[in-house]
Amino acid sequence: MNADRDSEVPREAEGTGMAAGALPEWNLADLYAGMQSPAYRDDVARSQIEAEDFERRYKGRLAGLAADAADELGRAVGEYEAIEERMGRVISYAGLLHAGDTVDPAIAKFYGDAQERMTAASSHLLFFTLELNLIEDAVLEAAMTASPVLGRYRPWLEDLRREKPYQLEDRIERLFHEKSVTGRAAWNRLFDETLAELEFTVGGRSMPLEPALDLLQDRDRAVREQAAREIARVLKSQGRLFTQITNTLAKDKQISDDWRGFRDPADSRHLANRVEPEVVAALVEAVRSAFPRISHRYYRMKARALGLDRMQFWDRNAPLPHVPEKEYGWEDARAVVLDAYQRFSPAMAEIAGRFFDLAWIDAPVRRGKAPGAFSHPTVPSVHPYVMLNYLGRPRDVMTLAHELGHGVHQVLAADQGALMAQTPLTLAETASVFGEMLTFRSLLERAAGPQERRVLLAQKIEDMINTVVRQIAFYLFERKVHHERRNGELTQDQLGDFWMAVQADSLGDSFTLDDDYRSYWSYIPHFIHSPFYVYAYAFGDCLVNSLYAVYQSAGNGFEARYLAMLKAGGTMHHRELLAPFGLDASEPAFWQKGLSVIEGLIDELEGIGKGVAA
Image (cartoon, rainbow, N blue to C red; front, top):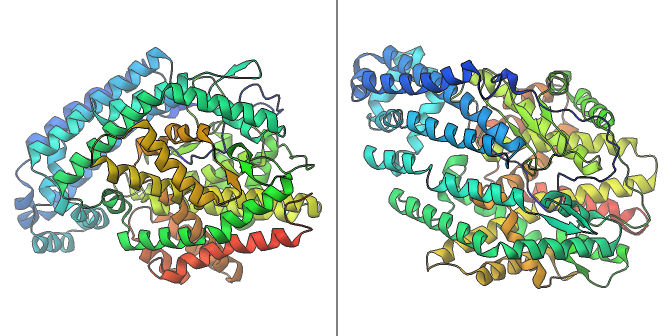
């Protein structure tokens, strides 16, 4: 399950007094009726039985089937897909329950047991992809050409072949797979449950992490500082544990990379994302060189607006002075997002509307609920579920638009089936960021005057800086961590040094970053769950900026091309998907085009009065 965006722009709060209205909770019955559901128990048992039977019938036969019985090989792939889907249904249900309450012992056990059972079952399927990759290229190509049954899976099989240089002997692959439950997965779970149980006391009130982070947006600077100091204190108190988790997982990744032959720590992520390392390098360099023109410039404007010579880190997401922030009740947020989607594509709005009408969204804040926001696709035979921590701020409306973009994408791609519906991370952010842009432009058009327009522009610029500049800074931090870990264990001080260096570089000279900021690396879940995931956000944001520019100048036909791109799921490479729009991410100018959109918004903001000043 992919968690979504992380930043210090939080997605959750408790006891804020914000009147959002009744907030919906998801109904997971479309997966299973409950933890004791007979259907759940049956699917767990069937997964094991069918996986073992599949292994008995097909192991050692695939090369012969490719040469002499291509249709049978195609049917075998279909069986494999069906078993994978059933296991995906089981683990999706357990994962969503756990996300809804990470501290309930019964749910934690249920989730852990589901992971163990599905890992055990899937170990009997490992041979299949490994053995497929042992088939000679010419033989497999002839089989795919001759058999429509097998040929349907061509995109998946061709993607699978990309993994061939890095796969290991069957028994080693099985060992890696089975030990993941007591290795990486166990450390991930420890991190999640530790983070969920942390308590922060601000203004005499005890709260979990996300409400404390929310106070970094408080209008009162003294409250922001108190919250920032308390977050630092609590994170530092867990510094030894978070440092150990980071060291262990970085070493675990190094061992895996070395065995598989990945030369660079990020290469496995690039391969999973189906993006060339040089394309990512061009993105990173383009963003890093734009730090002065984007984040440094904007934050100088913000410091002037706040009346500060230099800001502290708790001022980064401070609201603009003398400008009341509009609050959105849940029904208002629904109307804003669905209207923006409707104006672009009635088909897209209809799909997004299902999430509200059919209880596919979990929006309220609950103690123990996972932080952040995500859209989890579950399996193609069911539907996605969206998790939010809704506060009613304009940023929360944008988060709703973002996650519904993911949800619409996942619904449209579901027809590709369990093996080909999932989109690489770099393209998975396209629909979500595009949905945000549609909603932002809609709100901007409705702005009552220059003051409201100024606020919306500033918030959008800050969100784009968090999505592009901040995520590339995260990526640079991760690169430093994984490279230096090869030289031995990293201390808490070293990790703090790496963090402070990349933050100073990305934020610029408008900030004074004191020692309390040194521990803020430790709560970011992407570093733990999905190493090097973060650049996908910058990739998606810059891509959508370019795509939106095409939309603004395009005539009829853009909507159809856009929906076709989403329906493709994981069946096409980024070059193929972007070609109908005249875009190519491998061109150096592509990234500059995307970054220039952010610069243009800063220009527009500066042109309204005196920047962000009231």
